[in-house]
Length: 267
Image (cartoon, rainbow, N blue to C red; front, side, top):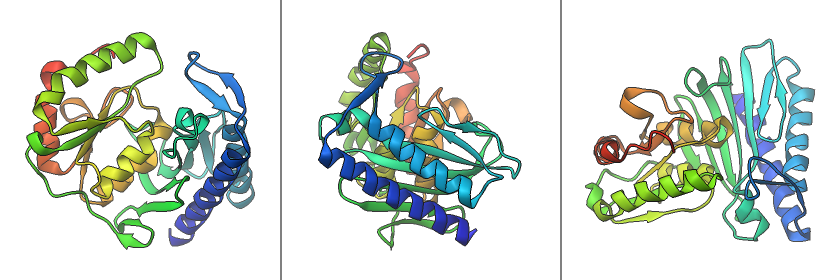
């Protein structure tokens, strides 16, 4: 397990270095995906190729699921879940809030059923490394991290995000409007991987979002859990694209109660 984690961390760090160097050289949009604001850059594709090629060389029997189209079924029972650049719009605009996220999970690559065993999120603009192994805690740049102590929601700083579809963003904004008077403030950073890393390290008290993809949450959710937090979906369900909420246990309960009346079924 330690060797696998070292491999994963090394891949994430090298991928983040490549992403940052390509950002410094200038960004080219390769295509739009689900909408005009859902973009992929040439750097996204290049970073994913780097990670996939190295995994295939080192672990040919493992599965791989990547945001930019890589889908390889493995035979080992392990799958690598890759987001080569999480926060691509930030990346395009040279806003320093984008990350590389890599996780290794047991079972099918489905957040509702998988068991994450290793993960890393690298804040590519700063080089800061967040990492976790199941049962071994979470670290930032080699230092152990914990979620912030639970506070009442009224003094909690809470992160969230918005989808690419315009109708979905409108519904998500309505949820924020309903919640914002009950918390200290809301942050929208633009990278789910960093939001979760910030919950794990205590920079945010909590985070919620609907519509995340497996690669958005795989490593970050493990970070939060290993840092002493709770990650959940609605009504006891596992976190998934349906809904994810992350916070210290007591605050997670309070935020879930506040969000329940606002529950965005169609967001």
